[in-house]
Length: 218
Image (cartoon, rainbow, N blue to C red):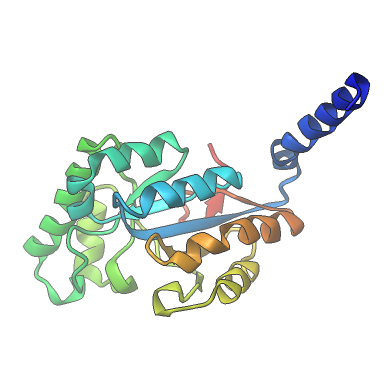
């Protein structure tokens, strides 16, 4: 290849490489991508890699028991630009527990995430989306905003890559989708999720602790 042809090819390549960053300025709305049940040494690195490669940020709702077991992965989530939330310590049905037990589940998770370098979470997702006045009281004690979801990807229920992409395509400005870090189909869907959101002018945003809705990253 002649030098001037090579230079032209490199220039085109460089222009393509910055397209995702340039698109960020064209956001007409924001959605909240969330991934429950991490972190782990097996799934978290692959998920973070896929998200970063596709220019996406997400909120990771971590279980305290796993944050305590894999603190390096908590730190990796933050380093990758993700936000870290509380998903209880052992993923029980919190509405079946007494207040002291709920307090233990939430409080120990706050500590485990902070110890792993994830900061002090401000968002809390109750396991199974189950909550009541006791859970709400304890969450409020720790300064946590409860976050459920608007769209369930059904990835926990064996949803196909196509179905997970389609679920993300239903998101509207400010809405939040439930996904999990462990299904292989979820990780495989990430490039198409990024493309689908971009085609609609939507960007992956942060979840506001004040409103519980997806907003521009602050």
